[in-house]
Amino acid sequence: MMRVWLETHAANDMPLLLLVLMLGISLWMLVCASRAPNGMIGRMLQDENGKPSVLRLIVLWGFSFATWSLMKDTLRPDGVDRYIYGIYVGGTFGAHVAVKIGEKWSGVLPWSKPA
Image 1: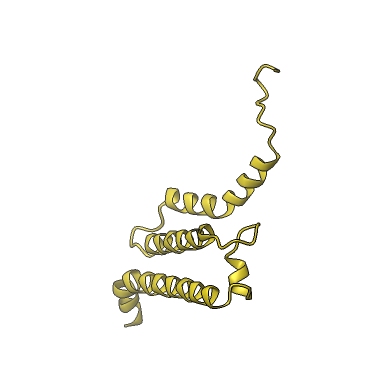
Image 2: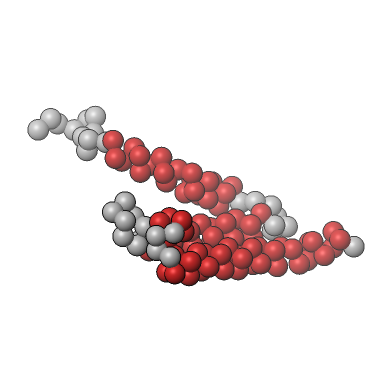
């Protein structure tokens, strides 16, 4: 009985429920940050200069939708698509590494001519 419910409803209802929950929490964070800009959540949504930054909220929303997409894909009867899973893992965990590498890169490629 439970398996039938999981196969028919969980593939659609659970990812959507978690997406709504994640977006609701992010909107709650936005309300908390607007009420107390110097509070913990308000400081979390500020950039390096201490100014409010919408970029961090956009990243959180992007993570929420990417997680929802992965959950929908995982619960498909056919199984997980390797490419969607690889893009999710690469985007989630590789972005920070790519930013750090970009900060340390001098802009010169090994095969480029010296100036």
